[in-house]
Every structure is written in C-alpha cells, then in structure tokens.
Image (tube, rainbow, N blue to C red; front, side, top):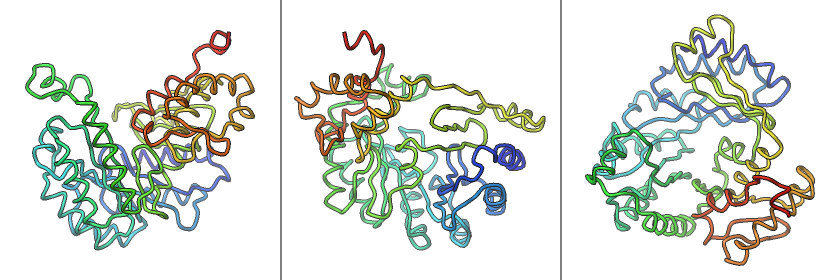
Length: 350
C-alpha cells in the first residue's frame, strides 16, 4: 500500500505543478498504524514531487490506543508537527456505545504523553450521545481544557444506517438522539470555550489564535486539495474526484499505471451551493459581493431573497457586506444553508 501511494503521488504531481503545498494531512482510516519509516517515506515522496513550503502543517490522525510512548517520541523527532487525536469522550460508557477500541484511561494517558512532545494538538469530542446528560458533557469539556491543548473539534453524533447503534435504537435498547439536548450541549460548549480564549472559527472547530487547522481552514474556504490513497477525495474548484474505496482494486489499478478515480464536473449551481454551505459554517461567512462577481447578479438576488426570513429571525446577520450565522443560528446552520441552496434559479425568482 505504501508503494502504491508513493506511485500515485508521482502520477498526480502534475495536478499541483508550480503550486505551493502548505498542509499535508494523514487522515481517514488509521494512519497511525504506519511505522515511522513508512510515514517518512510518504512525506519524502511528497517533498520530492511537489513544491512544499519550508514549514508545512503536517497532521497525523490517531486513535488513543494506537499511540505508544515510543511512537509519540519518534513522531516528535520527525516532520509531523500536529496531532489530531480521536478521543470522542472521557467516559467509558460513551466509548462503548460508540464502539470505540480505546477506553477513557487510554485517552487521558495518550494526551498526557502527547503534550510532552507536541505543542499543536487537537482532540475530537462528540456531543448528543444518547444518555449523555449536560453534566457529563460539561465534564468532558472541562477535562479537555485541563490538558491545555490549543484546538478542539466537536461533532454532533450521527447515526449511520446498518450499524449496531442504529439497530439498538430501532429496537429501543438505546434511546434515540435528542436534538434539543444536543443543541443545549453545543451552545454551552461554545460559550465555555470562548471564555477560555478559543475562537469558534468553523461550526465544529475551536482553536486558540495561531492554532486554527490550516488543513480545515483551506477545506472550508474552498481551496484546492489532492487526496491520495483508497477512498481519498480531491477538489480543484471546478471538479470533484474520489478514488475507489476497495483496497485491492486500488492496488491493482495503480499497479497497472491507472488512477482509480471517478471525476464529477461541478455545475455553476453545484459550486454556488457548496460556496454557501462552506462559507456559512465559518467565521469568514459569505461576502455578498463575491456571490455577485463569481456567480452573477441573479444568484446574489436569490441568496438575499432566501436569507430574508433568517435575517428576520436573528439566525443570520449581515456585517460589512458579509452574510454570517449568529450565535443563535450556528447550531442550525446546515439546515439554513440547505434552504439557501439553488434548485431552479428561474422558478425561484418568479
């Protein structure tokens, strides 16, 4: 697999010819299973075939049970300068419900070890977990703050079909997701983290100044990215591509000198919808003049028409020509953004 990924890096280097690479992200699957030598090989291949800035952000996603003291020490000696640790919760009951391989003790030990070697650390937490009351969620946040880490990503629990959790919910063994409770947990967390100096720069991301994820920021600002490996996604502003999910099919195609990627050309409507969704999730919002210049005056008119009710309800506001979510509107922003999506421009304006 490492050889195949290195080969794909070479095969696709023309896609970034002359462009500077600012962030390299080992994520999806369990990249922490790579040996230090293997991750160094991949990073070496990136540097050999792409124009990488002198100090890129190099992030490694890891689960607490994958990072040993020896691995953390060796990682700190190499080019990886940011860790993203999938903690999810500091309570074993939550972790069992989410079918996580690690326990709360391992999560705490992993963060303690990591903070001794890395300055730039992010942890993932999940709220809206069935049976998680406000007290337990608040304890999760307070424990995260006790480690003095500079970045926290927090996501509402999503229940995927055909999973054990979905089956348990359908059978009444586990209560369903309580949207009201999830909303209360979101708003409490936002206020608490902001008091601690975190900036809520994207709906699911909180960072101290100077510690926003460059990878996340580029993604939410709609910048180009190249995804390498099975199931990896890529985007260049006009097209979206995704590699085959199957490892064996991926290896076979790369071995034959083929890139196993499907590509979708995005229509103007698709690009507008993505621009709306991405922008409203961030503190940078949607500059209204950019809607007019990029998509045309009709799109600009449509956006303001659709947004009017949310402006009246105090869920959106306009500041210096930029459309933004209010604090009240942030938890609801995905639904609000979807309502601003374009279905049929002509019909919508008639």
